Amino acid sequence: MRLWFVAPLLAALSSGQATATEVDLELVLLADASRSIDAAEIQFQRQGYVEAIASPEVLDAITSGFIGRIAVTYVEWGSADSQDVVVPWTVVDGAASAAAFGEALLAAPRNAFGPNAIGNAIAAGQALIEGNDIDGFRKVIDLSADSASSFGGLPIPLARQSALAADIVINGLAVLCREAACSGRPGGYDLETAFAEQIIGGPGSFVVGVEGPDQFAEAVRRKLVLEIADLGG
Image (cartoon, rainbow, N blue to C red):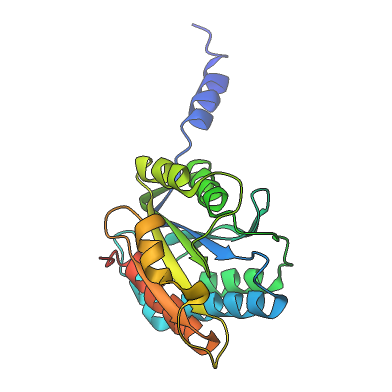
């Protein structure tokens, strides 16, 4: 029997059976880059995430997982047609990969602008999770914003419902104040309550509030530990 066809057949089968990268968590970090955020604020947000993801507490949470690694992507969002993948999906499994993620984040230019379109940001996060070649035990979208309002584009309730139906948890980082000397709630309302009622959802979902740049890195660190170790709620 002539078997000249076997090698091409096996190659075709093996290419169709490529396995996805397994991780404990797929995490989309949706960072506010809307028109209320200036260049300095973009940098302190990014620096806060760089410091947090490389912290001993976060690295310990990552390596203590069942698989011992997570996949993370950092996206800045503004208007309905402005969501920029600043750092693409990156597997973080220790200090070296966390540092590489941080270097890429600080080096990238800002490309997202415009008024808040939170619904479109959430939809972009869902698309990134569903379109990757990663298999995460848990899937989380983490939205940071200094407002729960949205202007145009996809309504928040529809985007939220779609993500939750896809078994994606939505957490929030409510930026209550961006000035070191200020206090209180932006726009005269309780932003954390607005996040809880309108944006977050899914098992163990939560909101972390932060006031001022001095607290930002610590708030991000605490939030990442909760997400990675699945301690929300």
